[in-house]
Length: 462
Image (cartoon, rainbow, N blue to C red; front, side, top):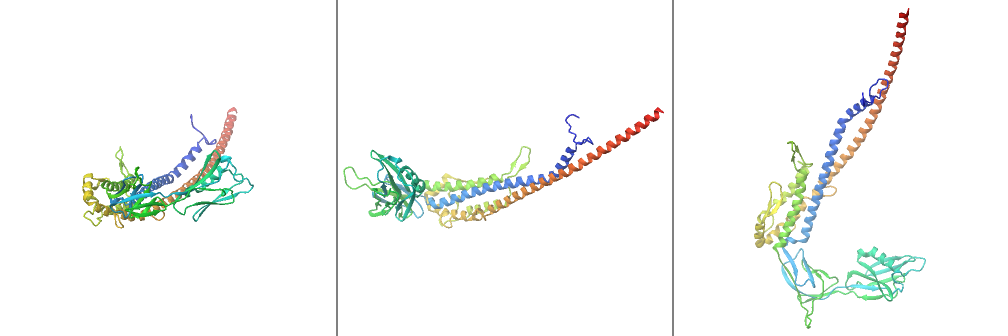
């Protein structure tokens, strides 16, 4: 028959096909079980990973909102941002004050001697490496200067090692040659840079700028700061000085800048919206992994985590805190200022009309619901702690169990494959022996028939 492979020479039977069929039949039940369990474990592991990522993002957002303290509804402003900018944080209170900046904090700036051959000048002509020590206060930045190193190479070495610590080096070139200029992001009196060592770069240095403190007045009170970022002068308010107050061209006193901290419904609404968006992202991730889909043929496909007890428990804990009454003011629930829950999807939305009306008269109540040790942000974080811990959390434990299951399934697969190889070898040997036996029997049969035919022919001749 065309296309048929006959592997049994003696029996004319396709023993290879028989062996393959027997092996496949033996393997199929266990292989199906392994495939199904592997698919389920892999899908569940992927889904739990997505939930973990969404939960981590949600908790990170809660931490950021607690730190920013933007639920206070306060926002800071400066009448002249060329003099100072302002941000508010925990402990800020509404009010305004006058700021007069007479001097910004500056950093030390130091120059080496001039090298006539420019940036390619060899600064270490010896055969052994030398050392340049850059000192600033109690810190010492050691720079190795290899034999034959150029000014350019020393500069690059400083920047690659210490740029992340605020130290920087540049090369300035003029008609006389090149010099290396060192400076730092550290400002204020006492942050002077000095050079020591045996590299030769420490000799003949010039001071280009002496570090100084920022000098300013708040409501007429004279103050100083080593940096231009001032976080402790006014509770909950951070000032960043950007320039000196402007003196009128005709002379006279400089014009003070007004720093204001005032209630802002827009800021408060933005903060509430940020919470709503973060919460919705978590719920959407959960919905995606538990969604039940009806197929075209009417069959139903469940999500990887549909009915999952751990996920249900986490969502229940979050929703319990969401619906709990809190705060000490007139408003104690999110629904009272327009934050509403979709009963079908569980997602939150803001009713602008209700929110704007509530924020106008009860902004402090809204802040009280979200902020503080017993506020919604803190309670949400606490409610999800046991689920989010990286090693001992509920989802981490589930991931570890599923990973172990996949490892075990891989071992089962290897064992099954080895057993099937052994079975195939055994069956092949048996069918080969059978085929040999059939070949011998056929040979004997042919011999007997040949003898009988010969006898019959002899008798007929007689």
